[in-house]
Structure formats: C-alpha cells, structure tokens
Image 1 (cartoon, rainbow, N blue to C red):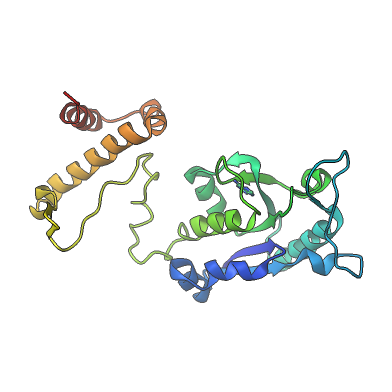
Image 2 (cartoon, helix red, strand yellow):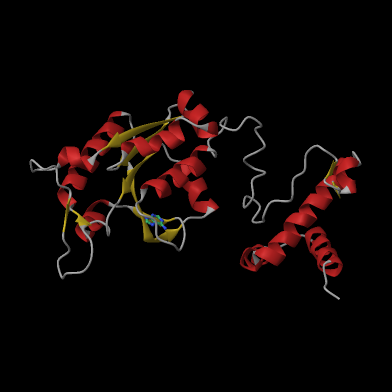
Length: 257
Ligand code: ADE
C-alpha cells in the first residue's frame, strides 16, 4: 500500500522527529506506513531577512503570519502530493477556532491518502490564506498552544494508529477508548498484590465471558461518572438491554449511602 502522505508547513521542522522517531508512529514511519515532508515557510519568504510575519492591521499584540510564503509552500506541497497520485490533497489548519477533534474525524481523515498540515505560530495566520487554501480547520481542545505543531502531531499520531497493520494486534485499534463511544476499562498487570492492593478477583478467574462483561460494565460506569456527555451520545445511539443492565448494576453498587 502507498504510504499515507503528510506534508507539514512549519517554522520548526525538527519538532516532527517526535512522531517519526519514537514508538508506534516511529515504527510506522520506518515501515513506510506513512511519510512526512516538511516545508519551512521561511524558505518561501521574499526578503533577505527571511521574514514570514508582520504586525496585525488594526493593531493589537503580537505578529501575524503572512499569506504569501504559506500559500507558496502549500502549492509546493500540493504538487508533491499530486505527483504521488493524490488528486485533491486536503489542507488542514490547526487552530483553537477549528472544529473540535473527535475519533470520528480521525477515522474519516485516516481513510484518505494524505493531508497537508498548516502549523501557525505567533497570533495566527492571515485570514485570507485560510479562506483561499484551507479545507478544514481543526482544534485539539479548548486551550491555546504556542503553535500548531503539537496539535498536528496529535492528529498525525491518532491517524497513523488507525491505519491497518500499524498496531501489532489487529484488534487493538478497535479496542481503543471512544471506538465504542465509551471510556476504557481499568488495566492491571503483575504483581497480583501491589502494596496491599489486590487485582480485581474476576480478572484472575480465567472466565473470559465474565471478564468481558466486567470490562464493559467498568467502561459504562466510568463513562457515566466521568464523562456524562459521552454517555448521553451513547444513549441517543441506543444501548443494548445488556448494557443498560450492567450500568444500572454499576450505579447501584457505587451509590454513596
Ligand atoms: N494551535 C494553538 N492552539 C491550538 C489548539 N488548541 N488546537 C489546534 N491548534 C492549536
């Protein structure tokens, strides 16, 4: 299969070693499951100081990234991807103003062949660049980072782990939290007693059906207590009688009396 093509516009290309050199994504990069090409907007600057930012019209603090160097870098990235046979490469701009990232978006993006990521620095980028070139503006959460790089890496990591064969066990991506709309169940490993704390009895039973039921109940219960918003969505999509029963049982046993 063709590698998933990532073209990244960034003033700090070295930051992306974090995804290409380490862990699951590092291995996927080595195995050419995805590839990553960086474009530094400074290389597309039109002045001798390699300037890519300027002060905001209307005043205010900080600087704004100029449209021209970014647009030229996007053109290069697009023609590179078109050369790979990707006919309409999608351009993603990472910013707190974007749609909030969810598993559904990750899944959708992972089904494509490639993406062009625009990472902003300073106060942001000239709005005309966004209007002209950006297909999708994505936020990784309601807080402000110093730049789009870490957000782009979050997205790349999440996308890459959805590509078939990236995770060793073919089931592990489907067992991830959020795939079934629920939080993950708790995990335990050796020793059986850690500083006086026992591993839940049921996990030592060897009864796979009972373990599966318990894990589902833990997922439901933790989602109910920690993320009621997720449980509402799950309820709206319909819960099985079994799931409803398991959750009721969890609620009963976790009542504070
Ligand atoms: N850039 C700065 N903050 C961000 C956020 N929360 N999500 C995506 N990109 C960002």
